[in-house]
Length: 301
Length: 247
Ligand SMILES: Nc1ncnc2c1ncn2[C@@H]1O[C@H](COP(=O)(O)OP(=O)(O)OP(=O)(O)O)[C@@H](O)[C@H]1O
Ligand SMILES: [Mg+2]
Image 1 (cartoon, helix red, strand yellow):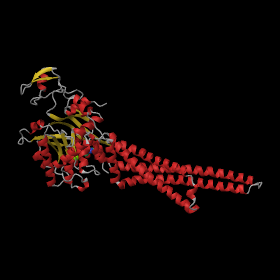
Image 2 (tube, rainbow over the protein chains, first blue to last red; image 1 turned 90 degrees about the vertical axis):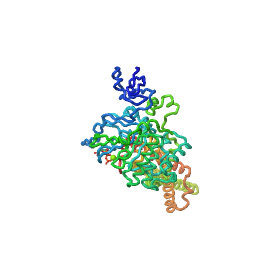
Image 3 (spheres, rainbow over the protein chains, first blue to last red; image 1 turned 45 degrees about the vertical axis):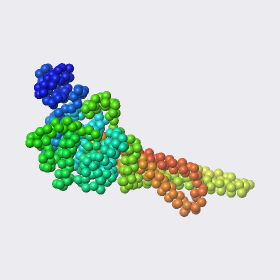
Image 4 (cartoon, rainbow over the protein chains, first blue to last red; image 1 turned 180 degrees about the vertical axis):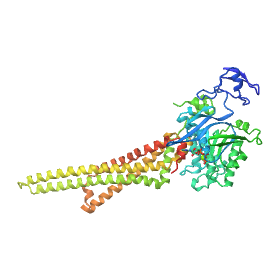
């Protein structure tokens, strides 16, 4: 335990070496900590985080993430060392040509598959350290998923689809019915509660999927080409909806896309090619406080 | 065990609170039943195909068993007739010898018939098992995407297995009942046409009911056992792999 002073705001911080950002202004403390002879340990996932800090500047971080698919004798490298820091509350688009590794990256960040090497941290927790239960817990409550193919459960109504993650989270029946209806109303489907997916248009199905992704108030919504199967207008509506949610609830949105319409709403655009980050574009002109706004309005019920 | 402090770290809440809120993942049995029943009734076509394996297997099994019970009943009533005939013609010496010969021949024929029947029952169980396994495999495979989606929503592997087991049990029970009726009534009808409509009165209904119960249990158990390996395999897949699988 040692006391250091934040170089940005002058706040005095007690740290065990695990916290590397200033709890007051979010400034990076690693340099100062190293200066006072503190070992910076934040990249080690097996450490208990200091509870005095509940938020980090980066909600997701990947370090040297690689994924190699082996198909018989052939090795297909889908990701070749991706280092990416995703800020809390930002709207991040991942762009790249087909086969560049967007879906693969999406799967790694979402805890849907294991990387061949490298690590992915969510809230400074190394996902490789999590057991099956913890991963399920993470998927259930911390991450919402939206897919290109909507992936609604075909035998369930819109409302049942939206409430399924809440059932898993152990929410009471009355509460989850209310919340499900609320969420469907939020995405403009308040009058379609009891329709089955096949009775809904593609755009409407994707709206249900958006509502479902928000079921347990996640910190992150991961969307893999959410507009890929939609026409121009409907796609635009979904993008606007996601942006609205991003601004209003501060949920971090990470979206893989080819869709140029996404550029307008993104805070940052990560271009990837052949499994590597080619460049990252900041939307400086949108600038101001979208990032900090997000961390103030943490999603909650 | 569940490390709540680690969960709390992800959720950004203190460990104590995490324990209080019980950071659990659940699928109550009542919900699981609701979902499974829905899966069976809304995918009736699929359920019927899966069920057809059970129906046919159990129908075959039941028909074999029914024919055994009916034949037992018939030969018992024949033996009774022979006995009363023998009693009526009591006093006729020498009759004993021929009767003894007849019984010896009967015993030989009877053991041969039983061996054949056991063989048939085993065969019918195999047919039943292979058919059910095959269709369970198909019904799991065609739902990989759904399984992957459920895992993305936070389902534990055990939830997936639970859903498929309930479904298999439902299909197993319904299919077995249908197969029972089909096999039993069909066989009975054939005997009635062949040997007259007094056949049902001559058979031992208690034994028959016992066999039908066993057949119901066998059909259900086989479909449960057949559903386990594909369901477990599907549940264990990484969600990304399940989602990518295309059929
Ligand atoms: N399960 C798999 N087995 C083998 N190779 C795979 C597998 N999944 C992806 N790949 C390969 O990994 C590379 C990246 O695939 P990925 O699906 O991540 O691309 P993508 O950027 O999402 O493309 P698209 O825009 O077409 O969806 C591709 O070369 C692909 O062929
Ligand atoms: Mg893709």
